Length: 287
Image (cartoon, rainbow, N blue to C red; front, side, top):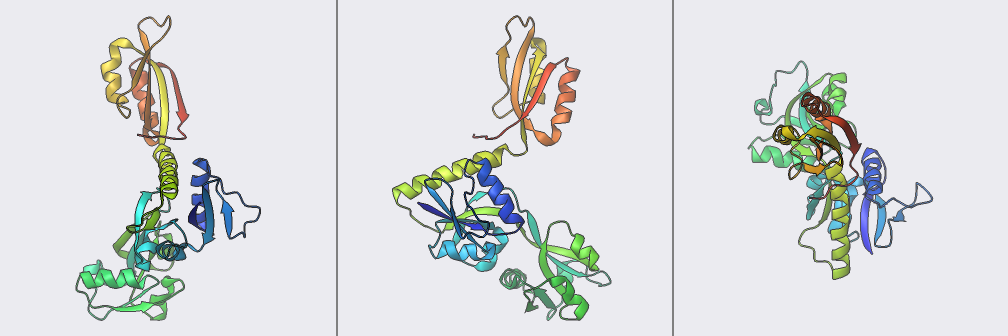
């Protein structure tokens, strides 16, 4: 049985459960406080803190794990990415007070104190730039550090920047961009059964990740407009064109399109006299 370390709480945990459920691997547990659960016959979930997952995977307690790339980098443990899961996107940024003269990380002087709960990434970043800053490790909210005089700069995770603005801080640079990843130990070699289970897991999750943000579009279009239609809905390998029974000069075209711009696609097709347009969600998408 393949053991999978999953985040036990927070938004990352919620998004992970949703992804696994959409992939046909719902988390089956009778109690939200359970430490483990079945994901079907081949998989067992272990619920741990997201920041501990790189350690669990590197030490072989879990075969595979789901956690943020920022936490992997901070841990320094030998794990590698197997699949970008497309959620949990955030940035590790440097920020200074609004009234500070600092505008970019290039302006940070030698000896500047930098408060962060990501000391390893921060140290590596500034060392690579030959900037000799003083790292001030903290475990709580970093935003308070400049206000208390603990540090002049903070390095912290942000998604929207709203927390920075509320606390009178201004972003001056990005150290790292992160998303949730499926990870395994570097250079690990699984026995055949586990290797096949891992391949099945990656394929199932990847098909759902690929489908998100996509829609399946169907429309009846004049045959004479097919060249123009192909420019509007190229699909993955071109649109599927199907003859319609008693359709006259019209054919049916089917294609996968981007959800974000589907309204533009519909408008362009209507301009070509398309009819019977139908748009549906895509649950799985495999290349």
